Length: 316
Ligand code: ASP
Image (cartoon, rainbow, N blue to C red; front, side):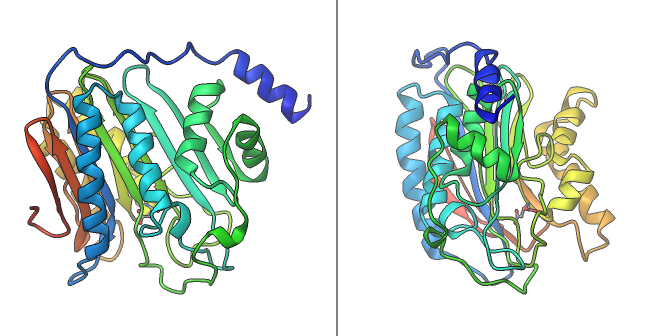
C-alpha cells in the first residue's frame, strides 16, 4: 500500500471527534510547565518572563473551560515558537549540526497518545504528535517516513534555516526541553513534552520525550506529568509511569511518588548521570515538581493562584 493509502486507512480507524464543549464540571484547574533543567547559577530571565506571561493567558483559557489537551498543545507550541527553549525553533543541533526533534502528547481521559521522533522539518513537533493521536490509530511516527505521514496529516514544515541552531554542540550537558501537564475543569488530566534532545547526540538518537511513560504520562484519576533530563535514564526507569504506578498500586501520594522516581534514577547514576526533573499534577490538583539537576526552569498556575515561576528552590 502507498503511504497515502496507509494514512487514509489509519485515519478512517481513528477515534471519535474531540468534545469541544467547555469544561464546567469543577472550579479547580492546574497547569504546570517546564523549560528544562538548569545549571547552578544559571538564571534564564527571558525564559521566566516568557513563561509567566504564557501562564497568565493559559489561566484565562482554563478558567473559561478550555480542555487540558488543547492547553498542553497551545503552551508547548508557544514555547517551541519562542526561540528560547530547546524545542521547535531553538532546538539544539545534533553531533552533525542538524536539528532532530521529538515530542509527545497524552490524553488522560482516554489514554490516547501521539508522538513523533527524529523530525527534521516539522515546525511544531507537539502538533505533529497531536495529529498522530487524533488522526491515526497509531501512537508513534518516526524519521523520514513519519515526517511524510504527519505532513500529509496537516503538520507545517519549514526549511532548515528556520531553526536557530545549525552547528554541532560538543556539550552533552546542553539541555532545555519543554513540557506541560494539566488538570482541567472537566477533571481531565493531560500532558505533553517537546525537545531537540541534548547536545552532542548521535543523529538518529531518540530520547525519553516522545516515549509514553518515560517523558510523558497522563491517566485520569491518577496523575499527569512531563519530564526533562538525562533521557536514557527516564526511558529505562519509565519515569512517569513509575510515578503513576507508585500511586496506583503503592498508595503513595503524588509528592512521595514523584520524589522517589527522581531519586531512584539519580541513585542509579551515582551522581554522574540520571539527573533531571518532572512537573506533575494529580487528579485532586496537587502539584509536585522535584528535580535532581541543579535547577529546573518551571512554572505553575491554578484557579486560585497567579502564575509563579522559578529555577532553583524558590518560585515566585
Ligand atoms: N530529556 C531530553 C532527552 O533526553 C533532554 C532534556 O530534557 O534536556 O532528549
